[in-house]
Image (tube, rainbow, N blue to C red; front, side, top):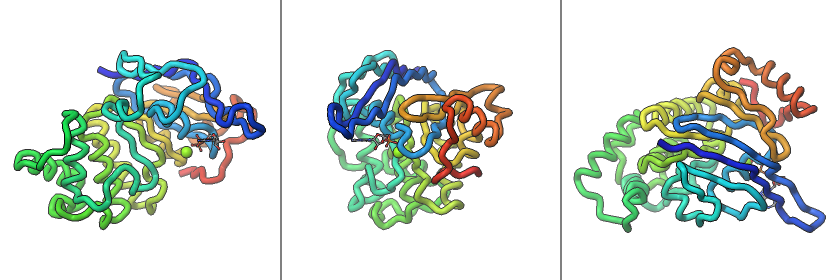
Length: 265
Ligand SMILES: Nc1ncnc2c1ncn2[C@@H]1O[C@H](COP(=O)(O)OP(=O)(O)O)[C@@H](O)[C@H]1O
Ligand SMILES: [Mg+2]
């Protein structure tokens, strides 16, 4: 069973210059195995930086990251990628658009085995087909279609499979439905929920939709100026409405949760 501990994370970008930016300011977070945490915060709050720290995209100024009992603070990013799946707003990121859906899934699948790319055998092919069938988008009949030819929603759904097929210890979703139309976003969120439950994944999901932040998962954190200023779960969260969430943020952060790009529902 895997959990994640973030201990005193600090990151200053462009340190020692007039543009110095404190992007992570003493971030502490204990994520239990199987937690599905939604992450809110206005633009520039440090949400993506938090993900990048976990992914090892830069060196922290201070702090420690423990994933499933292993201190990964100094582990290279490509090594962390074996255990951490991620998905971004841009459906092109993280997939090979000129390769077929089947080849993309095979690539993601072999990551688990840590072997180089293999020819897709019949058994794997059947497995991929069954996973695609579960998406209910008709993609099981388009396994030989290039990833780049899919619509944004289809590609995010297929990318979600890629990010989870190797059963990562942690799944990071950075506004993965933000570029989709509302109906498609809804569908992809629904698939997200199903896949996370089925594989019992530990997940952090950044969203700017406060309604879905409270509706999905078991815990919600809100960031501001590189800090976690609100952390709600359990019965407290069950009853929390969006206006109450905004009120709690106001009390803790001493300002309004910036409404630009923030959807109320
Ligand atoms: N690589 C970087 N170099 C310099 N500044 C950065 C870098 N990445 C993020 N920042 C800054 O850190 C702050 C937090 O950014 P980010 O984590 O992307 O915010 P969010 O995802 O919450 O919108 C912002 O002020 C941003 O400009
Ligand atoms: Mg971001």
